[in-house]
Length: 125
Image (cartoon, rainbow, N blue to C red; front, side, top):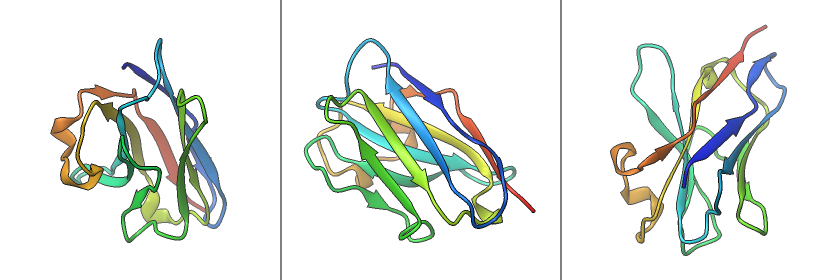
């Protein structure tokens, strides 16, 4: 299902942002959804994901306790709430989804067929 992102911006360290990822013309039912980020000069890395058959999100260690991934009941929108942002969180954030059956952590970025347009998050004082 195609996805459309919103959110992002320039914020100071310690503040919060929320990113949204909306399913365009469909829902995330039976879809695995992931948030990736890519900073300049670095590889794309997985931040968080929710498996199609589970409701408990996975978080990378460097965001655990600060970021929360959730989805609405109708499964049409997925959110990434980012609290206590740090300068190292500065990156372009991407929402990705596909109809995948296994636990979301086994899939690399190349296995997701639908990607959002990206949202720039800059954390700076």
